[in-house]
Figure 1: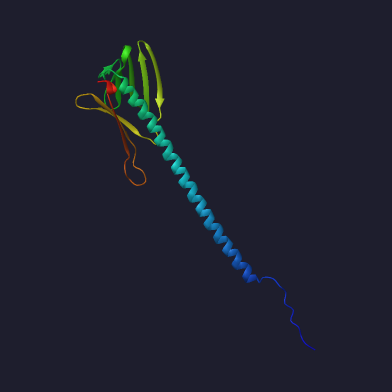
Figure 2: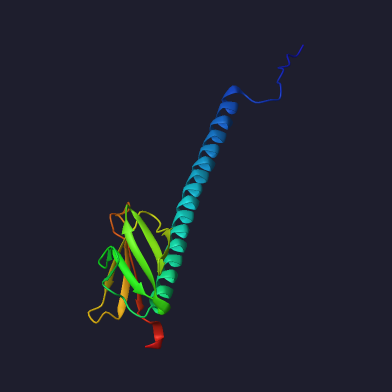
Length: 166
């Protein structure tokens, strides 16, 4: 009489544990990759939005300065300085850029009529206005607070008063 050992086909408990640990590691790596890519996407979207906002502001500023005939030092209650820029436009109209209460306000003044709107800056940038020594070149400087790298980002937009016509 021969004794037959009965072997069942299947996996041992140790083999199942090894497979489960391997699957857990794979899922951990996939999750870490997914979280990293989502963070990178959010950062990219935020930077893209900031650049688009600043480009729109720069275009508006350049167009206003190019269309202006002069940059007076005062108009009604406003006085030109680092936080305020006054532009005299053709036809007696004026455009005033003013930084106050952490907002950049663009006001159009025509006679007694006045219309204002807040311009977006993006990422807590603080604008500063300056003019060249001869007063022909006006600039808008956007200084952003230090980022994680500790460096200040500064965007400077310059435009010639009256544009290319002078």
